Length: 139
Image 1: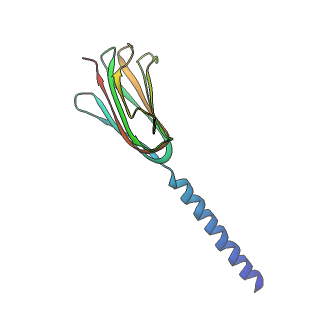
Image 2: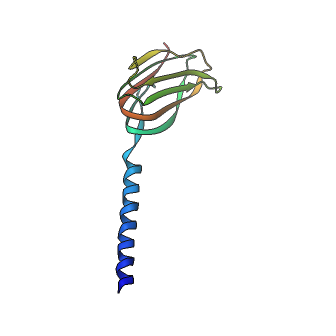
Image 3: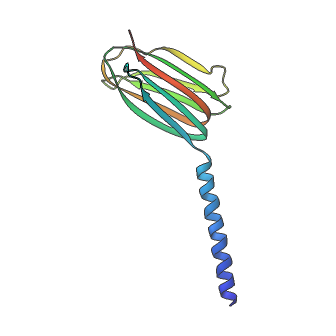
């Protein structure tokens, strides 16, 4: 009978431990969403509560440049990075916003690149807050 009670206590303790580990992993999350606008531009939203994430999107750009905007509302410590590569795989943009830094938004033009399928990557690191971004063809 004592062995049964000891076994039950052990099982309950193990279940509690595993349950608490699961909650810790779920506690920190980050998410990136891409939305294609009917004009061929790309918009997106980012959100997180201290987690890290990345997402990549292939965007058709008939132009050799693109205009970008990015902004964050986040607490100190997290970062939001926007990387864009042209159709030949050359990096045409690498911008990062660090939460709590002096800048909470950036905008401008990419470097000149090869038209075609551009790769857009958003990387969130320890990101806590929300933000948005947009990419449009150079007119």
